[in-house]
Image (cartoon, rainbow, N blue to C red; front, side):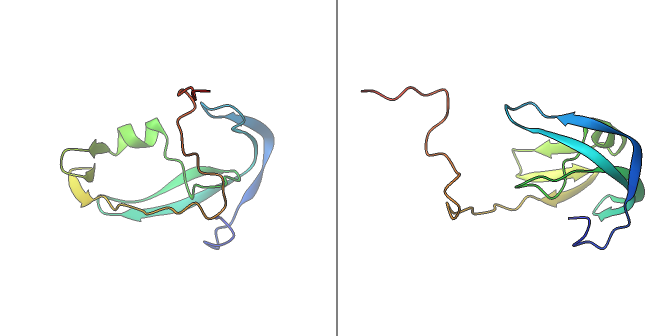
Length: 111
């Protein structure tokens, strides 16, 4: 995404491991960038770690969400940032690459 967004990145002196909360979601962060974040309720420059993710453009962390008072309003299907509400959009995802699961991993199939 950094290349697509034409964002300047810089190599980190001390690359670090990024471990998300799911099995196999491990990556090494080799680069960082100072990026401008603009959407309703926010217009600022932040530091961002740059890592390759298959299905995500950006993962927003809890510190950013706390500073910008991000609230996911499920009742009204909106995202509220610094008091500014933006309607959430439903994104239809087909099973184009065959990786979407039809069953939850916690469900046991009957034999």
